[in-house]
Length: 303
Image 1: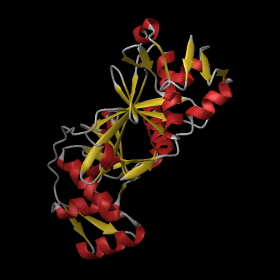
Image 2: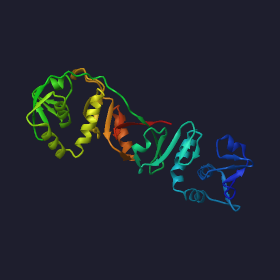
Image 3: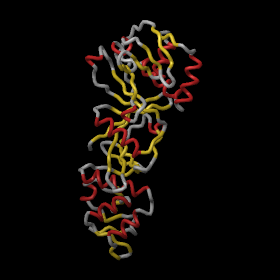
């Protein structure tokens, strides 16, 4: 079939193209988007300009004059090759689902995509596409705590106590021998709850914590919110996140699997999001990002 670039990227009315979901039917002409022209050219259609048949690279050069078309093309081709019929609508691809193509190098601003129902289609430098769904996260846990007040000592960048029950029963801190080590966010939380007698005042603990952790205030705010939701909250350091989250812990001997990793981030490169989601998947958890008092969960999906 002949595609003439001088006719609004159109061809004489072709039922086959329309039936396959390409272009817009305008009477005697099927009007195609440049990305559709490039895709059809890749798949063996002939493209002409002033009766001159164009080589594939010439078609691609013409299509990619608009940089947005580059990402649209790779996602369009991937979806079409998978049997998905999609149409191009501005910067989106619309079919059964809505897809938003971005580069792995692009930054994703979580506040801009929060609540928007589209699938992120991330195109890497080799043209491969990975798909991610995202949705607001508003989960709660089941943990109930009745902690008796106990004594502890500030030790430079952490707090230590000999009260093993705080770890064994409620999973605060970590235990080595008969010494339980609490993180600074755990210690401040318990101090504010009136469950901890410490050898320094709250103001001094906060001051020291801010010296040690540049984003201590943000981490403590997140920690308190997760505790308010009745989760058990532990460090996520080994997974590259701020916290890992358990719905409930009855005892250390019957320690369940944590369900979520939570990281503070207002925006992030798509490649970094992919890395965090991959780590979460590898340890059977879901990846959640916290920003502006909101939570956004990302999952890699198959199309």
